[in-house]
Image 1 (cartoon, rainbow, N blue to C red):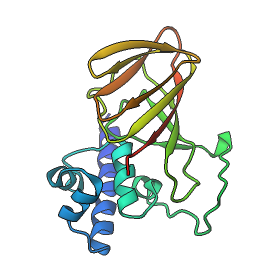
Image 2: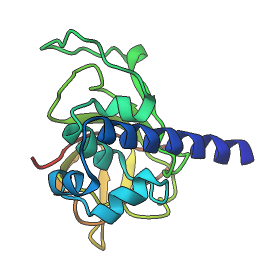
Image 3: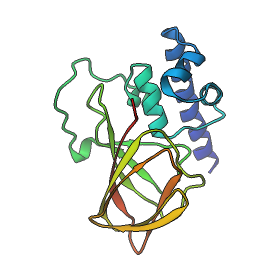
Length: 196
């Protein structure tokens, strides 16, 4: 368990350092980053100082303003120089995205990482059987299409049961979270975009 906690701290430390370095290299103050992202200056400072662990959607918005790919913030990898207009990600090429503050039962597989300067992010998500410790709240909209299983989705304090074939779209600035219910993990496609 200690190794997992240390690894989590190292991941967040790397993300925080990349954000801070990029911001400084581009001559952007925290105040300017706050205005451009819509996030409070204090929140951004807490992210850079490893006092807050933002969701992927928040990192996507920060990456957009800093003019980098969100995968760079998450992994440090620099995307290909030659942007393609078409991006195909084969099942074996999907990238597992580690969400240090997320439940280890949840698996995020990036489906869009190859496209540079994309307007949306898509993930194949497998949900655990317990709710996360804290609800997600982030700017933008989110579309979810249930591929397998069943889940309880809680949105802005109200609970919904969604199952295979169901699709829902919502304003992700309201608290939301979910868990698998039944005898197998729920798998779903999640596509989100931040409001520009």
